[in-house]
Amino acid sequence: MLAGCADTTAYRAPVSTFQDASSVTVHSARIYLTQLNKIERDAYIRRQAASNRHIRLDEIEKTQSFSPEEIAVRLAALDSLSRYGELLGYLANSEAPERITASASDLADSLQKLSNNVSLLAKRPTNDRFVNSAGPAVKIVGEVARIAGEKKIQAALDHAILSGEAPIRDLIHAIRDDITIAYERKRNALSAQRVDYVDAYEDTLGAKADFDQRRQRADELIAYLDVWESFPLTNPNEGLNAMADAYSALVAYARSPKTPTDLSSLADQIELFAARANRVGMAIQQIEKNF
Image 1 (cartoon, helix red, strand yellow):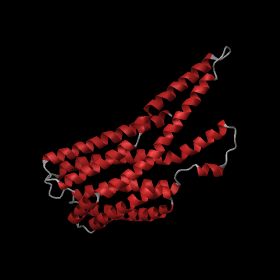
Image 2: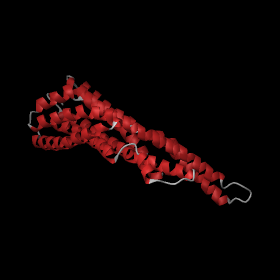
Image 3: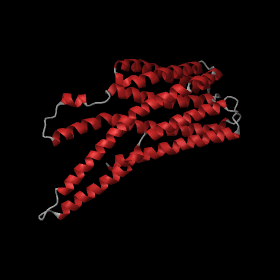
């Protein structure tokens, strides 16, 4: 992406930061996507228990928002986006053609599998936006990978610059919208559980109540409310939006005169992405550790 740039060494740091932040963002998104069905399943079980009703396996299956295949395809799309950024980094440092060829070949193979799996999802209306976004992005990334694999570096760069930004941004946003469903449902589930903790404390009240048990329930409620208050910091949308912005910054830099000022602007945007991604990642780790 930096054909003509005299100081490729300076560019390697932003690319490395972009890759690290992308990994954190993908990991955060993966947690929400993989927990989406668990959230729905647990909510169903709690409803059945609260109303003294039977639990049915077929009813549990009906609560699932996405099938395991649908979740796997979305995770594969995120992984491919990270690897696409890695390929662009190799293209920027074209003194390593063997790495470009290997990276392009691996990415092209994984994209072919992703494309096949995406096409199978078109039968379900809940996948419309994701399928419509994934199709163009897979095509663009696949073409760049193919051209890069042929060691036509400038052609691959031009194609990425002219064709890659909108489809890849749209794909990130489509995945973000799916993850919003997971985030909101987890927030609702956590909110409902606050009532359970309050009820558990209330059950310890009374003239003959055990003080130690009441204090234990109070401490549990305090710990849970701490988790609840920090939960908004775990919203993975922030990291995905920052990822889209950072990718746009990479493209903008490729179109620029590549002056030191342009490089500084790119570095600032990449660092902002890293800060936002790490903030979300740390918040998720803290909640996973304490709850």
